[in-house]
Length: 364
Image (cartoon, rainbow, N blue to C red):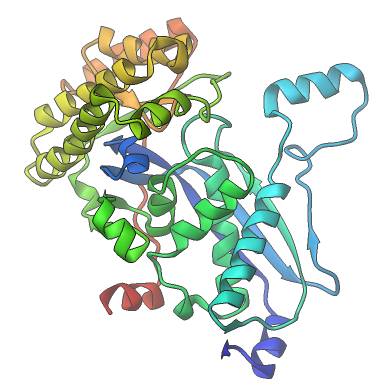
């Protein structure tokens, strides 16, 4: 068995561990990550999830006072809370990632000491905005476990997104690896999920890129976004059935990410704008307007009305926009978003926060 012994057990009792995981934006290629494609995504400092682990006598998963609220002053408060937050909070996410982490360690002969802990979380990532709010909580929790048990060096960086995805699949969340890779690695990442590597390695090939290659980008999101987990169903089955239109369209979406990598490296931002628009157009053709939802489509159209390039950040709920003409165009976009009732904010890309131990593992 590998991992910590009595010394680790004593040390764990004296530490408080806290980790953040940042929201991510799918810039190009999504949703081809679910279809052996390619994507580019980056993390942003605008929104994040925080998980704190404190050693304790009993193992406790603390409910969040807002997101896991179960005591209400009235029936109106209960219904309003469900309308705003949905039925599920973050406790189930924390429990699911611990189960997946525990089983992975058990299956791979990684020893875990027996000190208990209290786990709590907070998040300001807007719900159902396509910014990976759920996986942010899971990613931050996983980082806490890696440090608490001192097993970071025993679980490869490339494997960690798989663990996060497995935890979410435990809960029936429809998702791909892109979001989890972006949050584990941080910064700007190009991802290749070709079938050969996925079958051989169990994960994709992930290439960090220079964050300074990104032009100024903006986020558009709605106060009441659609459910970002409902848009894959029919397309997935059609792809599995070999539907020619879906298969060829998804291949083109993957190629958009490949071309986007080159465009970014060459700082060819007019090409980037065209690729962003094409990415959304293909998604719309594949999924249809009913699946995408009127509000999501309107966010894209508001951006295009002023000549900005735009596409979903994920599966809906928010849009990433690029203004080729600069700040004057961004001001027009702000005005149009205000008229439409949408929120517009400048995106703040966040650099990779892989620690030295992780970076050593990547170089091995």
